[in-house]
Length: 409
Ligand code: PMP
Image: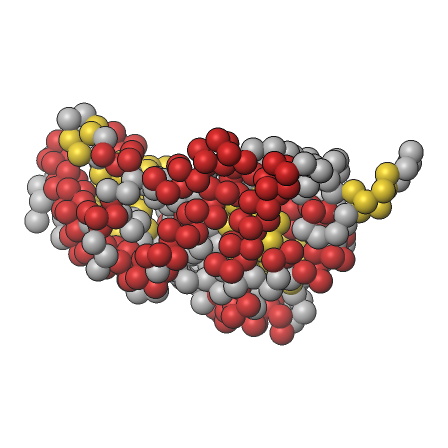
């Protein structure tokens, strides 16, 4: 396992105490804390390099542009993008998927076509497709999940018989922790001629991602879930698809020439980056990538799997606790309920011990319906969490249970 205590020292916020207790931050699937290296990169950018990018003829603006483009190259390398120009900076996964639905989807999906999603998709990989299908008169086909929270492969096969135009799924589920067999799902979808959109919000931070090995077509990620700044993220795509796509947002920077009544467009990726971009976000995200590379995605994945396994082991020993999702092929997300205690009550009680977990539907309401629960409590781990924090979680849960008359086993 990683030396979590040593890594934690890189994260200033984690030195804080909450209600008199050391802060135990277990809401990493929602957002992660930021290491000093990211904070410094952002501050340095503003102290030394800030100017608007791409348009400047002076040295400072050229250096700002270089910093922005170097960040793009850094991120491209991290996920083994097809090409650096195939990385479009966005506000995060949500905007990246809306870009694909709004530009690629609008141009290619017609009445009677099918778009496939899964029952474990986050709303941000579902609602954009609902909007597209409603607009076009297309069918949205949701693939069911198995009892233990995996994509039901036979239902996936049935959905593919409709020869969908687009197939979208999460690499890792934010609500269950399931690691989907993304390369296999992509191969099957390509065999029927579909374009594959992977929601990488929960995979990019937690395991080694190689989009070329996955062989998807579009891959969305969020910077703030991988130690980077809020409002940073990207769409990583096959350049030839981006080239052929109409633009998404119109405005400055995405154009080549503008006449009174029409325009020609800039080359990719700029065609999809209208307006002044979040340069600080890109620079901070590149620093986050450097930090993650320094630790090593494989070691991060291994560490989180060990924490999740320990948490599942501890939690399932508490009578009345149900843990959702598969026991293997999972990441460091542990979703659970405790008898009839409302997950929000669990989160509020744990907060008194300085433990931050999430409670709710995790932006996956169709999934919650299938689990027959309105909400779950969710602990999600990252590289700076240790087994001591799993102990703190289990201990606080037992205390919470006692308040509600549950007796620990
Ligand atoms: N997909 C998944 C699987 C997620 O976990 C999240 C964030 N909870 C998103 C998409 C949306 O990401 P963002 O809010 O950063 O756009």
